[in-house]
Structures are given as structure tokens and as C-alpha cells.
Amino acid sequence: MAAVFAFLGMLLLSVVVALLAAFQLGDFFRASDEFTLIITVIAIFATASIAVFAIAYGVAKRVRAINGLALALALLAVALVTLPRLVERIAERSTNPFAVGIENAHITLELLIPALLTVLVQWGLVRRRWLRAAGEEDLTRWPWVTTALAGLLILNPLGLSFVWSALRPGAADLLHEFVRAVTAAGAGALVVMAAVECYIRGRMLRRRLSASLPPAAEAGPQS
Image (cartoon, rainbow, N blue to C red):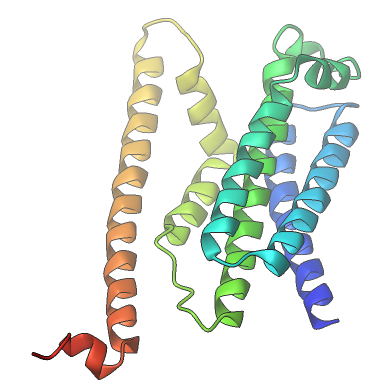
């Protein structure tokens, strides 16, 4: 029963994170009647993915299986949003006059980003619980601090405005070049921060693993 409540909590947390991202994207892109269907798809995907993670949690012999499953679910999310009929069916319900011709791109982002965040949150929680149950070190090299910071910086009206303006083709004016420069600088800073965090986490992980080794294993074979 404790495991059931634990996985329900993981599902709830992942859905909250996904919906926060979806609401920010939907508000930025001025989503209309189609947004209810988008939320439904996200909820279905989150429920299905946590069910798959729960099965893997019970049968996995190594944590690599959970890592591989997370990658497979992320690829599945990408594959689902590339299905033309799925996005087109949702776009048919859009009544936003400002998104005519580009609503497919908006809907794709409103589906893909929350789905990937769902997989990321569920993977982190399931992996951590599996390792603790197995008595292994649960520290990961994944840059969680940088990931959270990137989400806060990007998934807000100002951050989305900069990123969307930088990605869209525009005239070579000073304002557009400024937006691109600021966005590129911010992305570069996040990449550097992620690399530094991965390095620090890697050193911490090696120290913890070394400290957990018995003295005989640290000393090596004796002649």
C-alpha cells in the first residue's frame, strides 16, 4: 500500500509540473478551446508513463533499465507529437484568430514540453526510490538545479517572449539582434552551469562510492 501511495504522489507531482508548464505555454500562445484537449492528452500520458515506471520498478534488476525506459518514454513523447493527425485534430478546435497557420507549432510545444517534463520528474523520483530500496547510492549526475532554474527562467512570459522571438525569423534590425544575443547568452550560461553542476555531482558521487567501499576493497589485493 505504501508503494501505491508513493507512485500516486509521483504522478501528482509530475502532473502539477506538467500543467504549470502547459498553462504558461497556453497563456503565451493564447490557447483557446483546444487547450482542454491538450490538458487531457497530458494527463493520459502522465498516467500511462507512471504505470509503465511502476511495472519497471517491480521487475528491474538494474537501475539502467529504469534509465533506458525514461529515454524510451521521452522518444515516445516526441513521436506522438510528430503524428500529424493528433496535432491537426487538436488544432481543429482552435478559435484563436492570431494563430492561424502556426497553431500546429504552438500545440506541438504545448504537448511536447509538458510531456518531457513529466518523464523527467517521474524518472528522477522512481530512480531515487529504486536505488534507496536496493541500498545503493541515489545521487545522480543529472543537473537538477540547472534544470529547475532553466524552467523558471524560460517558462514565464518574459522568458518565452525572448526565446520565441529569437527562434522566429525576423528582419535584421537592432532589436531582433539584441533579443537573439540575449537568448544565446542565456542559453550558453545555462549550458556552462549544467556542465559545472554535472562535474560537481560526479565528484560527490565518486567520493560517496569510495567512502562506502570496505577497507579491503580500497586497499586492493594484497601480495
